[in-house]
Image (cartoon, rainbow, N blue to C red; front, side, top):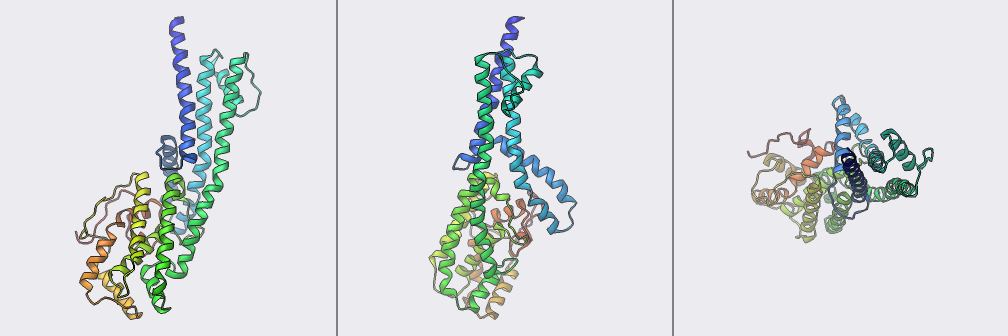
Length: 363
């Protein structure tokens, strides 16, 4: 009987240590590690929280209501994370204290909670137990400090992201449209300045790849204005660059091609974190969700606005498809995942629920 109890205490001790270490690793992966890293605890908390918020979304009749609900999703879930971590640590140290002879189990739980929250209402008897209690108090402070310390980092990245999104409204309207943006550049004779725009947004794509993979909760932080979204902004810029390269009769601009590549590479890296499937090597003639009729209508609008267009529209269509296939799948997936506001050629044709079937143009 004593042997079995001794083995049980060893098992409880090891389980407790594993729970504490697992929680610390989760916190490091979530806030400290400067690279994309999957974490079971964080992922599970965000998934459960999303299911809870989806219950409210089903009752929402308008986008404005859905936007107000989802605006709380990422912040509330982030605030829940330390609570979950602290609960796991408390249970882990409860197992450790019990394995060291603090009985009954309810007293071990009390000692663990007192140590974790540094309340001091439950005491321990020997030096080793005091050391364990101090280590638990230290772990608790570290977990809370991590969240507090990294919130400014997250909001700094969010602010940089949203500055470009807000500035896009001046160029592309609201909701943002690649066609409207090119019309506006045509009216102000600004096509010679497009290279600056492409370079700026190439940097923006590089920044969101870094920030949204190392701090993936940023993906779900919504813009201050309901009609804005980092996802639809990305789609607008990519479509504008694709139209410029395929249909506009202006001097070739390699920076636009680099912007498109920077964009779809960034979106794919973020998609990899969320395990969003996409064709890694799409063919230039793969079907897309923009129809030929929509493309011709867009060119007619641009022509009426005085934008110089290439004469061969058939080739322009094939070139546009060849660009868009690189980013379309991940763009529409993020429109659905983030419940982005409606915008032409992106969220207006994304499925309402992630994983829902989509009908592709040309199939």
